[in-house]
Image 1 (tube, rainbow, N blue to C red):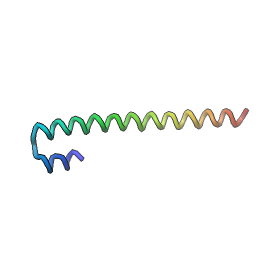
Image 2 (image 1 turned 60 degrees about the vertical axis):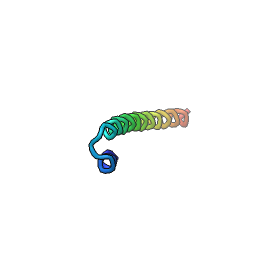
Image 3 (image 1 turned 90 degrees about the vertical axis):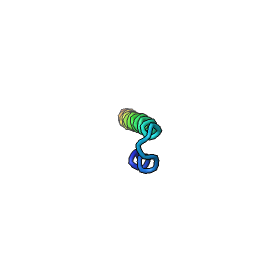
Image 4 (image 1 turned 30 degrees about the horizontal axis):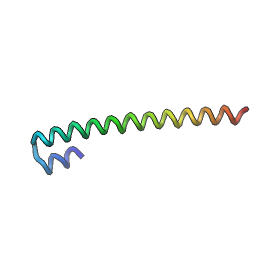
Length: 53
């Protein structure tokens, strides 16, 4: 996505600002993905525990 922005806007301050925002959103998506995976593992462990009871 950053290459597409640079291709459209060239090397401008707007491009740098957009690169920063793309990076921030990408980090947030990564954190959300990790959180969702952790939640999936927790649910799986709880389901296994309750199935044994």
